[in-house]
Image (cartoon, rainbow, N blue to C red; front, side, top):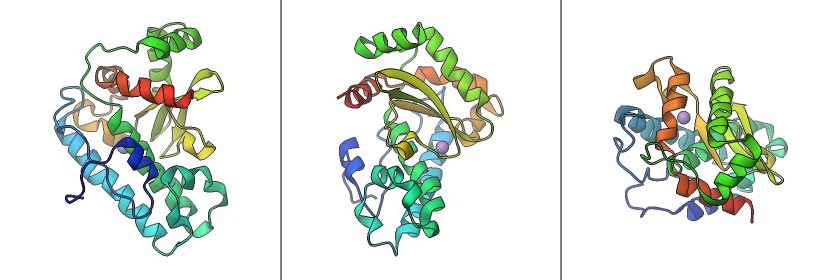
Length: 219
Ligand code: MN3
């Protein structure tokens, strides 16, 4: 919304109904050539906005549910009324996933994790190169639309692919990072070549932000 000042991630996480589209935080062409400006504009302003609008529409008569953050709604997805369950799962999941996605990207050619995150990646996947290969492989193998996430399972890092807009938040787990493998995320530049998009995407990972999410997860 134009009149709002930019919200921080934490404020975004505490937000309740009516949900709003978080600002992208950088220009549409900031990730080019790895992700083109047209893709970013459509993806943020149209796709994500639609998830927000449909989520708000689904909750408009649900006074009790309007008090909850998106994380709380998704964590209790199985017990939500049938009338709103699919809408919250698909559009609420879409809102949460994309809100994370915008913040974990910046142009960062050949960037790599450092510190404790780098150590944990080496420990659980062998090396950063092995981690990227396994993550990309999970993205290629995700049939149809979906996401690939890095999550912390106890003290171990794990790669998890999920269909559609499903999210680890549905199991109460906050993803450390995730990549969108819906065609709308890459079709303009990469056409049907998802493996190439997955490979190039590592040039736009904001490792400082991912590191923060990793630390928040391990608190
Ligand atoms: Mn998307």
